[in-house]
Length: 101
Image (tube, rainbow, N blue to C red; front, side):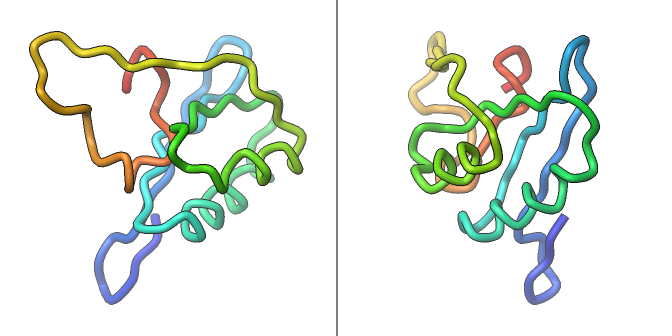
């Protein structure tokens, strides 16, 4: 978790999976904070890591590629009877995983 002016400005969570650690959600007020949260987390994780980054955050692919990540899949979030997408895409950098959102 990161704070600015006494308020939560961002956070990152992760969970163990069967074959890798899923990092997400990553929620931050700006991409530089999201990158700092991820840079803090990655060295502390042993083994493979998966992230499901929203396409609108164009600053992340170069960072992830430089860290050895590769694009494995695309993801389209679908909704039924909902007028708006879940969450705020400006704050949500990576989701918790397709099964969790």
